[in-house]
Length: 321
Image (tube, rainbow, N blue to C red; front, top):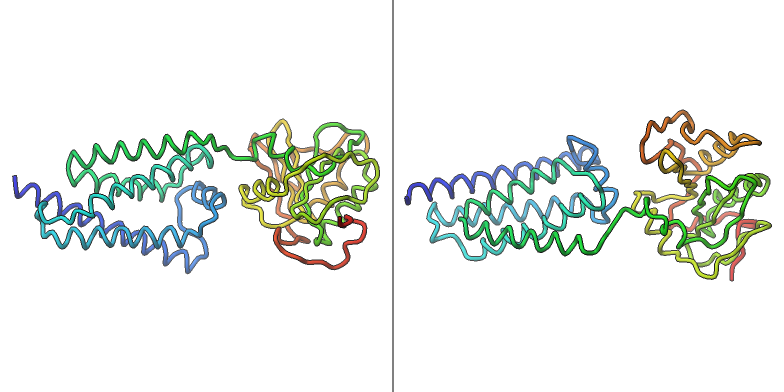
């Protein structure tokens, strides 16, 4: 019996070492390549939806597994010598994973293969410390997952309120649908040029979403202003989509969500709209929808950061309160 326990702890120590080496390799790859290594697109989706750098997550993970490794090494194969804090540390790891796994399932709606691999290491390490440890881990993981799920978090891109809450003003054009949503700021000259292009394009129904509180009015005729609008809702939606520059033009279509970033892409798209009908929303700048949820044409030329002040000549775009 003692030999079996020693073997189990040795295997657990080996797994902690393997996990540490895997995370160290991921950190090195991220520094070298600029982006983490992942076997599917889930990592990129999750990364765009989080504010914490992947290097921070990986650094914390490396520290976690190193503490586990040296804690098991100090036990020298004897379960009685395993430090008591190891049990609590591994349970804390499962609590954190409950939040991260729930986030991927409920918010990102995709799984990061690398993150799932790390989760498996933590589950196995808890298992190797005994049945009691595993039962406690399952309960803690379930509690953290259910608590996160109770918040009813969803990706705001699919939520209609995400578009309506941040509307400062709306202009109804000759084409009621689709309704476009322009995200802009008071200090972005590229936004000003897009708004000026909308002055002569009266076919488009467009809602204006400022990302700063300085905008109180848009210099366009026939605008209907809302009583209240949330700048934070506009910034939160862009952040959730991993968008950090403006102007941005969005539209909900039957095929999904159309997203155009930058003055160049927006101007080109507005130019292609047919006088009598509107453009082909399933093919923008050569990008075919194919039933996808997002359309992300490459056209971020002519843009400003969401939090950047790049004032040049903003006359005609908006007036300040």
